[in-house]
Image 1 (cartoon, rainbow, N blue to C red):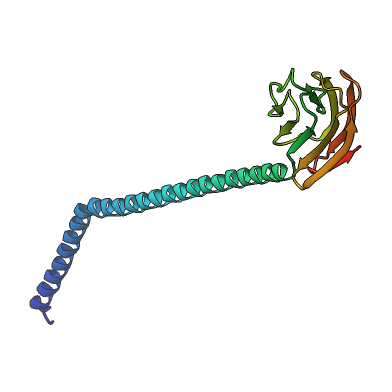
Image 2 (image 1 turned 45 degrees about the horizontal axis):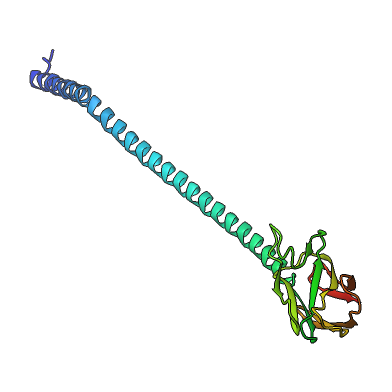
Length: 218
């Protein structure tokens, strides 16, 4: 009967022990280093989370900036539209200037203007609050002129009257002429011979449209 080879058996047992020892060492090292691997993974996730949060905040800031820019543009458009409408309204309106003349010595003839609101401008009431219209020239000793003017005439009808206020000793019958000036030109009023004192005489009407057109009816 043959005896087993003790050297081979011893070698096999030694190799198995070495392998088991190596596996045990690996397990021990893995157990020891596992928390560090986990921490490293957590740190990577935290870094990615931080980067994503930063990118999201930057995106929010960009959106907010675009919203502010859009709001600013919208406000600019509204202001431009309002300015355009105002400019259009201003350019469609007209000034008015009504001038009356007479050439007789000493005599005093008055110009009266009644605007669309019923306000009567004359020597005793040359202006009214809230209006830039004015009886700007008032001569009391002829030959002379009287003038009424407004920079932007509201739409409506303006009535023109003359009044021989005082002859001041001159018995001559005065002839009174007049002119209406406006944005697109001027028009002569008919001549009037004023034979009676203190008689307010209607001369003509001036109608201003909303588009600034002027029509004169005599």
